[in-house]
Every structure is written in structure tokens, then in C-alpha cells.
Image (cartoon, rainbow, N blue to C red; front, top):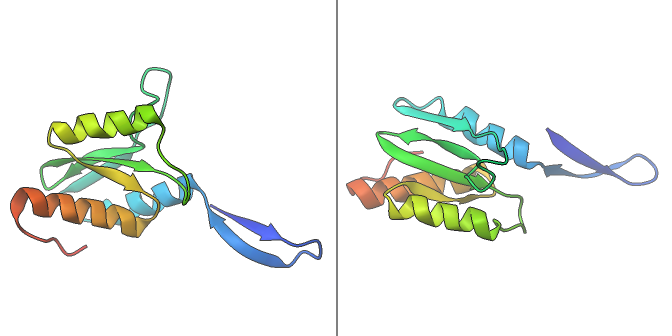
Length: 118
């Protein structure tokens, strides 16, 4: 879903993506790839610092926090991403589909020495 911005005359000034639309773009793209499964983790009081997207890419755990441009993860979210990374997961903060592609591609390269074509 995109939020449109209008002036007083009803003219569209621009479109702004929401975290939900960025998340959906990432899930739609990666779940078409063979041997890749990502899902949206729904937050609750028990996992409010866990990343928005979780899953696996060619056998490697993937954790992605989705944020809008100009927004940073909370300290709890950043700590959770560090914890996942310390235990071998491919992780990062994505503000777009291209960010998510770079996170997964670079993480996979670190572990395998091979650069996937995303």
C-alpha cells in the first residue's frame, strides 16, 4: 500500500511507501526464489524486538528489520539483530527491496564465497 500526498487542490504530490508495502515487496520477491522461504514475523509483547522478516536462504538463516527511510531500529531491535548475527544469521536493516537484496547477497557471499544473482 502506498500513501499519496495531495495538495489542497487534490493534485498528487508524491507517493510514500509504508513499512508494510516494503515488507510485502521483499516477501514477494524472495519467496519466488528456489530454496528461499521468508515470512513476516508478527509482533507481540513477547517478541517486540525480533526482526520483521525471518526465514532461510539456501540453508542460511535470514533476519531482516524493515524501516522507512530516515528511521533507525530501536535499541532492542539493533541488539536482537546483533545477537542473530553473532550466531551466524544473515541480517540487516532494509529500507527497500534493493537493501534486502544487498543484505542477503553480501551475507551469502561472506559464508560461501559465491555471489548470488539477486
